[in-house]
Length: 476
Image (cartoon, rainbow, N blue to C red; front, side):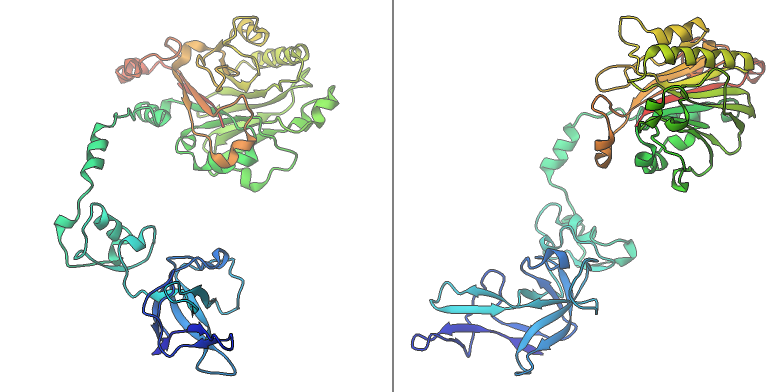
């Protein structure tokens, strides 16, 4: 065992600092009067030294080595610590240790005294207050000294598994919450959780063999949001995912493919023949993902459609449908856009496969009372727009879903989603993440019809029904 104490006093005659035979008894600013250490001792830092190396107040470590002065082997210059929580940015040494030097503090109660000591203390055990925020694989917890509400919970919740928790001096009465907190929780307004996962609940209430779902998202940058999409709790339930404003350019990285889906995409740069200035701009683009069990192929080129960001997927089995994703940039003049859109709709009509579902961000506010030329074109071709709620934080409806046979609609809604803070810079000022949905039913009224009306039909009554379609629209 090594005893370390280094208190100095200034010699009034020579002006030099002389080591004292015995230290001052008091502790000063985290510097102990005396340390009794041995290799392997558990210690805890009592000061913030170097954040980059993990040398912070409250950090736990094991004493691994002592670095002594070459001139005086009994004088310890540095301590080599093996930290419990290692920092990958550690910059000292190649032995996975961090090295701690002495700190200096004036001993205020004795004029002329200076303490030079390592800012650590023994920590084979420590108080519950000191381990708040700590995570460990195992711990021994004593309930003997618990005297406040919540202390017991803090203590037992430090370990990562139940097998790593060892309790001594067990006393169940020490496990209690602050009564003021309990009262506040009981008085909180209870939230309705039924609409947190609406698409999931709708999917569970329908026969998956006779329904087909489509989700539309304005991603505002697919590469920036692909991890959000992969982690989303409801997107994977959809048969088809339609994404607009993907901002893809040429080669599509494998990271942009979704497990269980086949991807069809079209970038802005190959979508314009007569508007080269538009083709050169970044942004735009569309993509459609189709579940692997669905037989589908892309219709790549359409006669007279030369300047339009679109992708068409023809579904062949186990049902028939045409799914289209369209994006109109806000700077794209309406006249040429309408010419190309009209040619596209005329082609889709000639293919004669229904229903036709056209999802897109058309940058035309459908809640505006004035003229809506894009919607008028769809209406003239027999389409109905099924989204009725605003899809932006400015209460505009720019993102629409048009359906060729609206009598098939079984359900529609729009869902607001949270914005991930690290992606906020990628979001336009007039956008907020929203999600809208529509479910198609071949023999019912348009949208929001109670699901139980359809579900309560007998199997015989359902036998003449076509395939049902569910369409969901949203923005990221």
